[in-house]
Image (cartoon, rainbow, N blue to C red; front, side, top):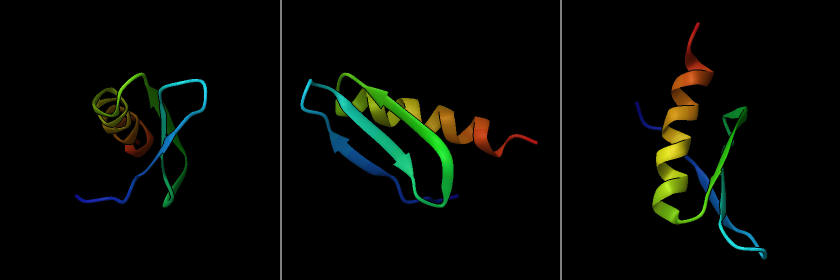
Length: 49
């Protein structure tokens, strides 16, 4: 399954990432890689029944 994610750099450092098609699905990370890994886990949790 493919979903679009939006990765935003934060002024204080790190990144916020969210899924526009899943409004409650948001995560963050200190690096891009960490943010992407975290959102993958968040997506799984958001789609869990």
